[in-house]
Length: 298
Length: 229
Image 1 (spheres, one colour):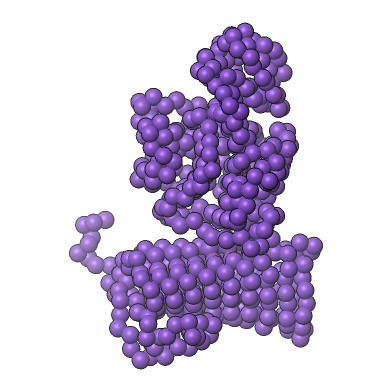
Image 2: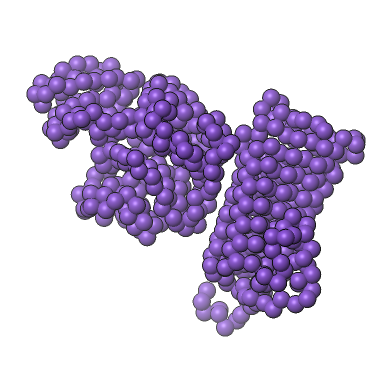
């Protein structure tokens, strides 16, 4: 199973409510995935600043004085916002690489959830309602976001095995389904220089898309070529800094419903996830076609 | 008219209530409100009730229906009217995958589009879709009729037995052992009746359709193919 929800806002007045809307959608999908949950929020970029979201199994120890230590290491100001097991480190945009290198030395046990100008990812093991409340997702603002509830099949129930997966700057991907050629594809992507944190199939799909984007393709092209190269069952929802994409495999047995109004484009594994969105009664509601790439850009 | 508020009273009470009315009441008109995309609404009804579901439904709405007429004033999720035995299910909007799957009797009408696997393994149900249907529709369909006013997706009627398929628009591709067949007067007559019962009279004329059915080449194992296994 697994549940996916997504919201791409067209109406700026809804941006302060993005987290609240996504949280409600996510909790509705608990039956589809009670093992772990995660959310990717595109909160808008501050010029010249980048965000690194990190996770720790021992946040009290790892996050203590982390901003100070990182500032000393890179010689530039660091803003840190701790939320439970995650912390968002805001740094000058040109310091991303040096900060990553420094973090690997300063706190070797930290896991990097996401890097980018706008994206923050929060994910943990547990029921969606508990995950959403520990990170206060309902208070978050943003332009678009994706959430996932996981019923694990391909790899262990761990924080790193939870979705969304992020394998490139401001990029993330969630998945309902299972891939059958991920081991071979992972080896090819490693040869191409991509790195992996888990044995999870979805991480391979995320890295595949990131690799295509790195080669200069746009999101639509990356997803189109994925239809050729990724074997298995999938409904993917993908986020980039200014966009939001959906693609289903040619068999399309994993469910997907979309709704569009003048205010938003919404995605749900089931219509249930969208019932409380404003104006849903009059929204255009449809099922995305198999092997067809959909994407929206700001 | 009985009104049932699904949000207030819950799914189990709804279905138990509908099951309990069999032969015990002359209150046959029901409406179900606040559906919010819930699953398994009005499943297993076995009485000549007239049920209107207000709003979009989740999985398996009206599954295993016997005798009842169930109208969905919205879209239907996966498996609407799955394994229907008799009666009628009418969806005002679109239907998700495997609508009418394994249905043994009755009539399913979808006024919008149906997605993949519509009528998969149908065994006597009649299905009328006003819009298009998706890929692998009528896969292994055994009997009954599938009428499509719009287009059909890939692999229509793959491994078909004796179900009759009528499509007015384009067929993207035919599945294995499915072929186009001659439209004879009895088929035009059958279609006329299906269009009328499917609330599609005036939307399409029987002569506009083409008929597809089984080439009957898969019924028996062909010994010449033994080396392929």
